[in-house]
Image (cartoon, rainbow, N blue to C red; front, side, top):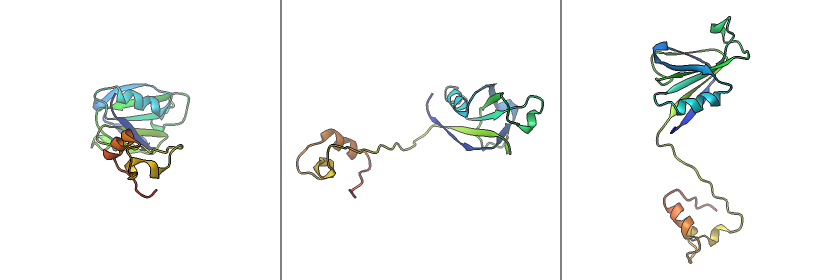
Length: 137
């Protein structure tokens, strides 16, 4: 699916179960993220380790689980509490892309994108024209 997952919330997400899309075994938070990205209505997810006898305490065990929700983390029906969990949100939007170009066989002063008088690097020039070029080199 499109997008990426922001996953910097290390608390448990308890959501209104009417917004729960799926609940399944998942080894890692990355598995939750991947599944959320490939599920069309998924907006947020939580990955936690469950002790099946004491579910609400989120004790670390060998039974990692994932829940996918159709609403974002900040939705009024979601409640984040302390616990051994990782939460994430699906993010689809105009996030900037970064490409750092470090050529090891040409110096910056020989790139036409950096005002070299000859057109030595037309593809790099085109790429630089549509992005940001740092002039402190």
